[in-house]
Image (cartoon, rainbow, N blue to C red; front, side, top):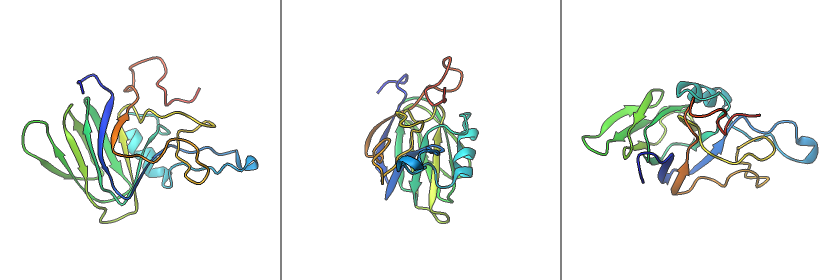
Length: 174
């Protein structure tokens, strides 16, 4: 992995981690649920904190337990749950912290989100958003309808370009 990769390496996902945005409303007549972030206010708050549009794709983490390593410099915000988090720099000592703060990771830094002490669904936003394909106007995972990306699994997770890195980031609706 190089410093220019817009990728994270996911080591652990906790009980369930999904890619979500504000969902795909307006398709109920065809049997498609609205899906999207369960706690939309927390999802928007996390996105805005890292400079993303409020509806950018991000991770919805059930009860915490996410462990990722940055392949590039990235800003991260976690909202929706209270949980310990630890940054393990590529070089240096671990920095303990907590959710509801903005964390800056360098390439090679590892972020470990502990188990939630309060709340059920946490929202983890990365500068640039999660790079996911849109289906019916949304990048949200709909497990019931099998639409959108599969639940997040260990391995690479692509990020979109950070704000200002192009004419129209892929997470913007056209």
